Figure 1 (cartoon, rainbow, N blue to C red):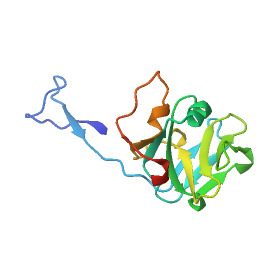
Figure 2: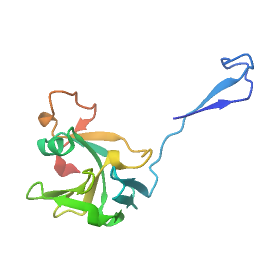
Figure 3: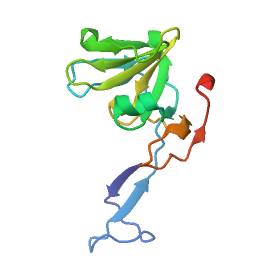
Figure 4: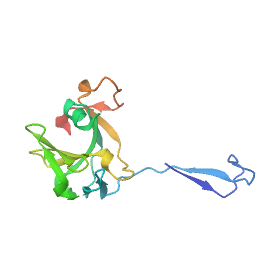
Amino acid sequence: MRICLSSQTHSSLPLLNTNRRALEIVWTYAIPEVPMRGSCLCGQVRYRIQDEPRSVVACHCTQCRKASGHYVAATQALTESIEIEGISNVTWYHSSDSAKRGFCKICGSQLFWTELSGDFTSVMAGTIDGNTGLKMDRQLYPESKGDYYDLPDVQPVDQSTL
């Protein structure tokens, strides 16, 4: 949403002051900008997503909660559409027999998750620069959530559907 002050006088709108300036509210809907850009906390790893990414999915599994300190919220794109600058600063941790997680080796920011045999890479939504236009619309493993927070109001799905 964008809010702007207008210097125009509108008799039908509420007055803000004695100069008869009106408040004009302009609603805009965000559309994901491609390419999207993002980085780690220290900026030594930067990435660009060239393809339109998937919506954001929350994951409450124990591994994601331990890796992030909370639940993970991630988008996803074809691995080949993600360009990484500073790749030498990414450490890949094999968190299971089927997946690995990419972290900045300098600041520790969790950036990526990918299945070893997959064509897609998940990108942590909080590392994307600026407004994304993306929405969280699904969640994984709600039965594993921490007891200190409420689940987002989105549909639980099986990971195989993503």
